[in-house]
Image (cartoon, rainbow, N blue to C red; front, side, top):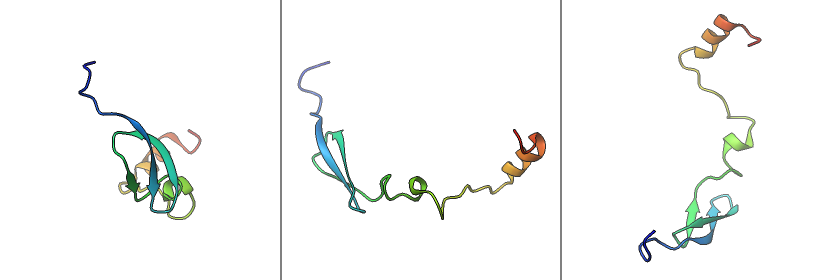
Length: 69
């Protein structure tokens, strides 16, 4: 690699809107995010997490291969 053309990586703290903090390596000094693994519904599970099956593909698969596949 050539010397002097690559940005410096530094360990920074990323702050989420929910208040959680995560440490990552980055070239920027500060980073704020809206959602993280602590507050995103997909990672939290429960209500609101569902698969969207607009074309009935899951039902088609179950008809073709059965429930015990």
